[in-house]
Image (cartoon, rainbow, N blue to C red; front, side, top):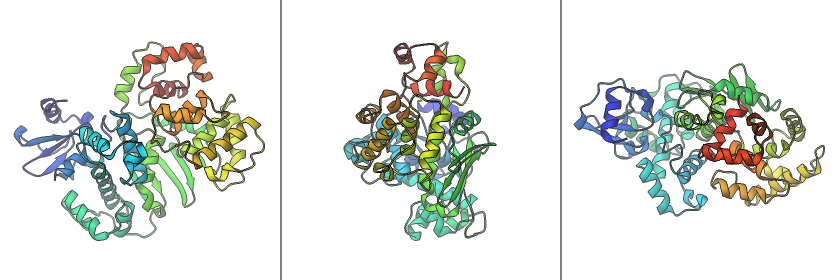
Length: 444
């Protein structure tokens, strides 16, 4: 969008553009999102930014009325550049900008150029904005001590935390706090998304595959057991999910928020996806408002479950997974499975899981989202017992790759009455969102 189109969206207070661009008001040094309830500023006083981080890097403070730093990701953040998309995910899940270029296999200069072109800010500035948004949310909605909020937002120094909050919002942490401190109180996060979101369809999908004692889905909530207690996610209005977890998890709040975003695919903008896929008259029959990719809490766990699910029913695969984790406290790690005796399952699957675990441990297979679709699926297919179907399912559900597509999936072939080869050919018209086409059928 050009500047004049952006200004027209502001005049119309069109909230649908939230996250797509941000406006800074030169006379107040405050930046807002489209749809802000404040008086519309004069055109000559407005400057536009591609991201909240760019506005903050330019010295603008976040508006305390429209909360622009809490807007869902922009189209650029959702994957205008594949490398940028992977970088943002790594940044959010690790909470560390150091070594980001090396993990992605690009030069630091190239990565900084990508961030500058699409977001108008550096990786460190984007991360700083994420941290400040989390800090303000916790100050306004939780009873955590200020020092605990600082640690949760990734600040090791209370002095630096106070300075960053004052610079970002024009207020001190104490002035932003709305609830009294209560040590040990539960931690609650609000996670924005581009509406609509078919939350109920995702819950039904997860419920059919949930492992007793580890994961639950139903009655309007998704729950995951962690060593510190249960994490629960529910709908919170038309454009947010709410996550509730033990206060002990506060230091990992940023990482856990990113995981929840992956589970429910909250970074996606469903409007252009639905418009593109809806051009296929057959696929259009399966599309429902708010389509998302059903993700996974842990990529390695999802990879193992994809191996277990080869050529068997969902119910049988679930039973095998339950038997696999029985000797462990939770789902076993790659290190635990690398040399484990895997009884009670076909030898081919047991061998494939063991080799997968060893490949993850030694780095031959990377499930951190740092590699592109072709690279990660090729590495997975090097493992005996893992073929294209398994590799594509792992890329789709564990890594959230938007164009992953298991063309040999029996359910997809039966739904569209096409053989794998014919389905693969038809799916070419669905790029770059083939994963959403698969999800539409699975969730129907």
